[in-house]
Image (cartoon, rainbow, N blue to C red; front, side, top):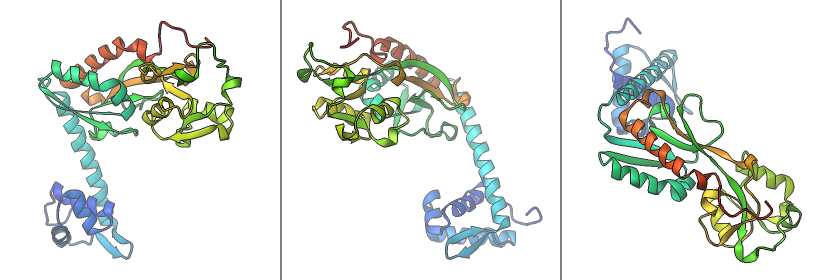
Amino acid sequence: MSGTSKTLAWDDFRLIKAIAEARALPAAASLIGLNHSTVFRRLGQIEDGLGLKLFERHRSGYVPTPAGEEMVQLAGRLDEDITAFTRKLAGQEIQPAGELRVTTNDTLLVDLLTPVFGAFLQQCPEIRLDILLSNQALNLSKRDADVAIRATDNPPETLVGRRGARIAWALYGLASRFPPDADTSMETLRDQNWISLGDQFAWLKAVRFLQDYVPPERIVYKVNTVLGLAEAVEAGIGIGFLPCFIADTKPALVRLAAPDPEFAADLWLLTHPDLRHSPRVRLFLDFMAAEIGRMKPLIEGERAVAARGS
């Protein structure tokens, strides 16, 4: 490719990379915000300028030739370098201003973080928050987000941050069905109707506990979100394990057992190493760490009244 007469631009690499990923011109056009005819024309211009075919046209789609594959690999490296450069520039900003992209899950946002985000914006009016809800980890290396707030015991090694608290879980039911003198031993509770997160959450120790110790026919309701889990317990469908920061704020619910340390998970504030010295990122992390520290008794399940059976 070094002997060709055409000077390649970054947009040429982007176009070839998009075609290789999509394997079809309409889909590639959608990826890079062009129309199909423009992509077709530019591909022809690039191949004519290079004097090389970059793709073979098969029934399965556009397949890169060896020259095309080499160009795709180089495009990937260029993309990574440009992304890294952008991160470094973001980390060197002088004033704590601009947009900050924060990813977290729906449970933390609804029951814990929204008022804290509001307080942060009042204190830092020059910063705008873009909240991205996802129960999957976004790629902070690609600037999908600047900060991640996650409940995990295994934060990615590629990120840096701080552990804010330990999220406690306990067993809850309707207070109206469990008076203070009720028998809440596990032997008795096994015969209750139970609510659980779905089997796709088997990595959670609370879910594995139910799979191991509660008869399958007693698990009458499964849901794939913690928010739905809390709503189901409050609706009286059954009993279930919930994060204490959710359930302890609901007057209709009562703890049936003390929080189990084995079910707890760390609450992390994470960012990419290139962004940790950015004024807006540093200001946000410091603010969130202080607020989470203030809410630590709620998050970690501390309360004045002992749980039943404790």
